[in-house]
Length: 402
Ligand code: FAD
Ligand code: PYC
Image (cartoon, rainbow, N blue to C red; front, side, top):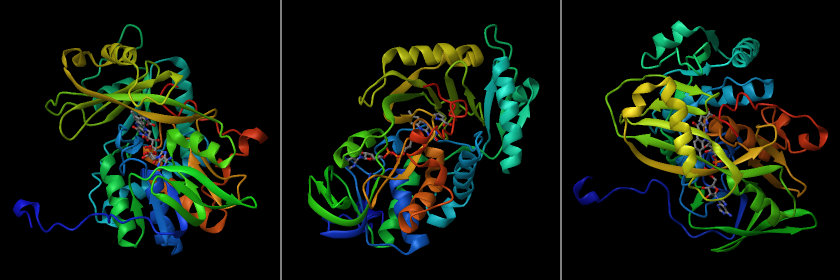
């Protein structure tokens, strides 16, 4: 099979779009693909197309730093993120595709007294929610991550919120694994197919206009992350979202020196080590709305300056590459999984800086919402919460500065 790379089967089919599908999902990122997968697996709906303007997994799903955790504060968040984390544990087996889930543990550092109080509160909330996290002191932090300087002059490490079953996974593999499973169920994944308009009749969605022609559908799911506002505008409503660039960078590969994930939210930096040995580093979002997929230069300096106090060894590292993605941030830093004013049209967006970890749980809930009109996992995340003032405030647990 390896001779001249001949004889390989396609992992997902390349077909021209059909004329009509029961369900169309716009956006072949992790959330769109997982939604399609659970529509098929849990609800037997397989006449589905996933339309992608670029390439599969080329949005934020292929640009993130792969941190998986479920240590959120509010009950609806803990439910959906913990569902996702637990599905991640068996996802390689379920998809028969190695997504390289690595439950190496995640520490969120407390470097101010406010954070100490905040994370102790989260640990208590998590124990009531059935999410296993614990508050740990500075010496335990140092034991888990010996390269850390816990006595920094500006921001000494006062402890941390530790989730031993958090970790990382290979981001592309998550998209590829779901994509192959969708193809195996007979779904169409159509790349280079940008949705340019949404057709409606009598207040009900009837299809989409695309760069590959018009396609009819019974139901439509918009799962387009940073471009969700653009798609909502096509359908004639607005979403309470801002789109901003979030960037990350990796160093040259070095020998294994860190086997946990560390987030330092006060100083706006986080770091883990990839299987290749690169230090994977990120900071906060750009301070202005944009669609650049690059990230502004001064952020790199700010992030590294912030992290050097806690990880002095990174001052000696050469950085290899940097990239950005456009994240869709809501006012309460929680996602929107919702019906919309247009009958048959659903949105899954607002995951902002933290949606990679949620992909399996989000897909599970969104599929149930689209199939049955209601899902216990998504019930609290409807867009009407912004009108009704029922916010799900996760501005601390979001972890990354916005
Ligand atoms: P995407 O993967 O962006 O998919 C949306 C797709 O829609 C795209 O492929 C896009 O091309 C397509 N699309 C848009 N418009 C159209 C159109 N008109 N027609 C057809 N297709 C269209 N989360 C974590 O949990 N942990 C992390 O460590 C983490 N780190 C991050 C680091 C960075 C630098 C970034 C940018 C994000 C990070 N995130 C993290 C957030 C996470 O990446 C996102 O929340 C998640 O990937 C969103 O997935 P998605 O499927 O909704 O979006
Ligand atoms: O949500 O855990 C997270 C995260 C880490 C880096 C970016 N987002």
